[in-house]
Image (cartoon, rainbow, N blue to C red; front, side, top):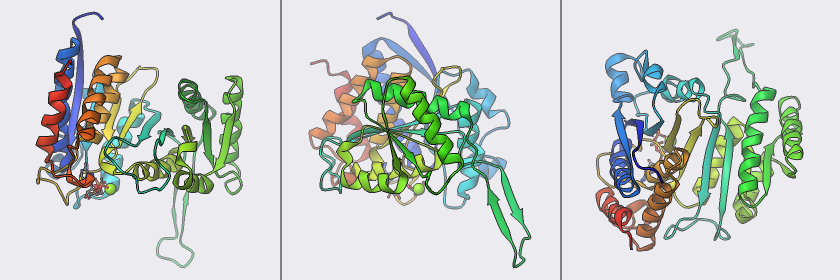
Length: 354
Ligand code: ATP
Ligand code: MG
């Protein structure tokens, strides 16, 4: 391990509990960085809902340029009840994902120690969802016609490109090969006969070329399987919309939305990748100091892994898992610990070398 490894990470803590869980993450990452011989310069970006209220936009006009030379982006949560969801999405998250070609959304789903699943048969559940993150159903192609008239209509096109499907399939195949070798592709080609049939063909081509079999499943049946036989799943590859739905379902199956992480990855590393918890700003509990920081900590561990700091990633993961296993839990997990108390328990374990 060479000394002097230094990274520049942009921090968008954002709104509500985003601010609270972010402080937990940066302090713990700094501790593992020191223990592992690297350092991180955090560049704080005060973007999000407050920025929107005073500037009429979620981030500065040149926001993307400001992020471009960083090594990674760590995001808390953006969104507030008085700001429409599409403003948050199209004003910050989608531009970042697209500008930096973060075409993979990677969501690991595992039952953590001390966290119980609402499912009967979930012990040992361990899967990753590889969601296509920049094309597919979330497209700007379409429009509205005959507004307010009886014949009014809305049309929205899904856009799938060969390049887009090949690269997400390749990423998923590599994940499957590094894991249990089981690849399940979410589809709906019995009903959506153009784009989904194309998806099936390209995913199968990529998998076959790599010597892997792909299990193609209709999204409805796959949703049922997540609930009924979650342990039978290893790597799921899915389009933007199907991946969005199935990953929230899987995160809920793993016990709490507060513990789930999400990574928006640019695999060639030409641009910064972005790491965030799955949960939102949770205005109902914001400011009370009771938010669960595990989703943010796990996202930070994925960031360290992406930066090549595997030892740091493992140390951070072991630290929050050990705190949970010792019974330190926030309220959403049935415990009593505050965010600060849980963070202290993780911090103590980040530097513990015994
Ligand atoms: P947004 O609109 O930004 O998505 P939200 O209010 O919808 O925010 P979600 O993340 O969808 O928040 O979470 C739904 C609920 O789950 C929250 O209102 C909160 O009660 C709970 N929750 C979410 N994240 C956490 C967390 N980290 N710790 C504790 N409770 C959480
Ligand atoms: Mg929400």
